[in-house]
Structures are given as C-alpha cells and as structure tokens.
Image (cartoon, rainbow, N blue to C red; front, side):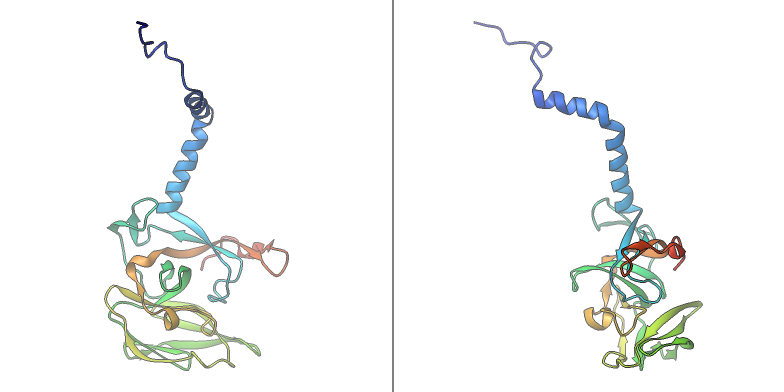
Length: 230
C-alpha cells in the first residue's frame, strides 16, 4: 500500500500557482482598483449628462461630480442606506435612479415632503408663495430667467413656443418623496412625467462640474467649463 503524499510534497495545481503568481505580481494594482471601486460606490463618482434637460446650468457633454455621501452612507455596491446623514434641500441638484423612467436622471429638487407646489405659465408657487424671476436673455426659441428659490438663485430656460407642460395645479408632495424639475423647463422628463421621486432612489448631490466635451464639435473639450461650480 503506497502512502499518500504529504501536503508539503503534494504538487501544486497549475491554476493555483498561476493565481498566486498573478497576486504577487499585481497585488498593489488589484488593491488600488478595489479601493477605487469602493470609493466610487460609496463616496464620490462622476456622471455624464447626454441630454439638455438641465440647460443652461448643465449642458450636453458635461461630466458632473456626485457626492454620494451628501445624504447617506450606503453599503458598497448597493443602494442600501447604512446611515442617513442629511436630506435633500430645495434647489439641490440630485442624481437618482428612477424606477419609472428606468434610468439615471439629474434634476433639481423643487418640492420637499409636505410642500404644496403649483406651476402657472412656467412660474412656480411653493406653499402659496410665488418665486421671484428676473429676465436674463431672450432668443427666438429660448428665454433664460433667474429663478430664486429661497436664498438660492439659478438659471432656467423656457421655450416661448411650447405651452403643453408649462403649468400644473397645486399638488402636495407626499412623505418620503420629492418633486423634481429640470432647469430646461420645456424639455425635461421630470416629476411632471415620472411623478414624485422616492427618497431611496436618490444617489447623491452634485455641485461641481468635472469636465465637458462638446458633442457638436468632435467631442473637443470645453476648457472653460472644467471644474466649474453648479
């Protein structure tokens, strides 16, 4: 009867040996990649914006920085919130995974839970109070206004020839939900189409551009938009 080879004398499997060699050679790179994936999943990431729904604030080809810890600390690689850090505020630009639209969207928070919001001729009313507007520039198919929401002011764009979705009757935002609108009011699939956005769909907040590529000019970079605040 032949004795079984000991663990020390047993030959290594080729696949295991190759794996050990690969780990020894590229360990630092693999650890770096793993840490980067965790960082992008839980702390910060960037998101490209392919449409003009947030014009003139965000234009097609912009890459925006997402602060994923603005509202929640999440379990890596999931949407499960371990700790709630804050809640979205009026005027925040947020990124969320819309179950209704079945894609990631970027919009501005207009109504908080419990708010009563109405829109009349592209002018917003929140809790019975009209927002202030100031004309910025006017073209044949686009008019830009400054919209003041509390202490925050930002630019919105109106198409003077489009009136189908320029208003809605007063609605009350339900608990745990938010009313979102795009800054390009006549060209945005927002809460007027997808309804109120649940709190747990919100991924994070954006206040910064990273870079911008001009889709209409061979994807050349727009250097004047690099690292600009939103």
